[in-house]
Length: 152
Image 1: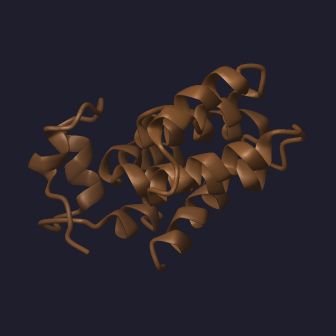
Image 2: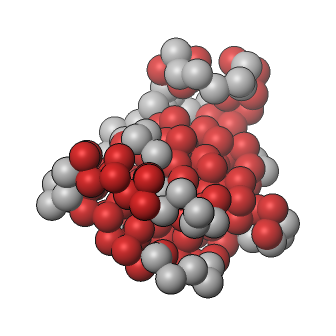
């Protein structure tokens, strides 16, 4: 797994300064997404924001699915939306099905609807935000879901 340099991170649409990245990177030339995920010196919300830009679309979408599952949302269609989102990620479902799912599940709770966003990074940022609102102290737990997915 290759790492990201500070200059690469500054090229992304995040709102962090060079000084903030230098503090997080702590002199390392690059950091992998797993290292950012497990970095105990930075707040969970900052790490999640950075990771949402570092992760590829598929990994970000799957992390969003993991978070929705962990939230235990009561909604009849949640299993269908999770299956659709994962299917889009693995290529077994078409993007047209995602668009149809957005119409079909428009009354679903916000975190569930977020899974059908066309960008995995946006989906994981939205779901993370909803999850943190529901349980303000769960940032580390949400990041541990990603660490597990990344092999940590």
